[in-house]
Image (cartoon, rainbow, N blue to C red):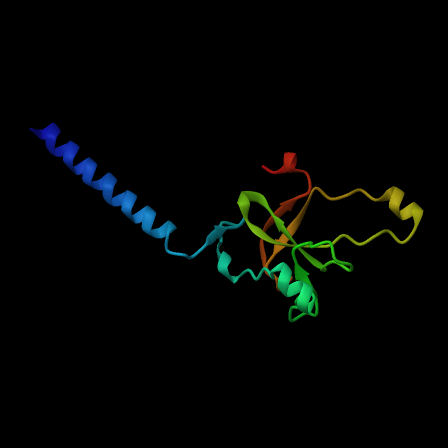
Length: 135
């Protein structure tokens, strides 16, 4: 008798939890958690379409920087779309070339870079250049 009640309570709890999870996931809001365990509403990330970029060029943020996915256009955006740790999508600053051969030879590439919103200021995660370095 007690086992039956416990089983029913457990089943009802499991069903209600499943409904709540499904409702949260299908609500249309995309929420990511960055490296600092801060919730970021991923819908605030602006990603221009290829058609928009071909028609109007890369969009420019309030700091005067272009941003968007790499569509093979020259010049490319200053903030390039990337996927970082935990599947968080954002922008990384495009690498700048070395000014001399000696500078290029001494250059040690970083293992990671901050991942930003399109504003180029709000850090939302970490991008790892080598996926093997991604914890």
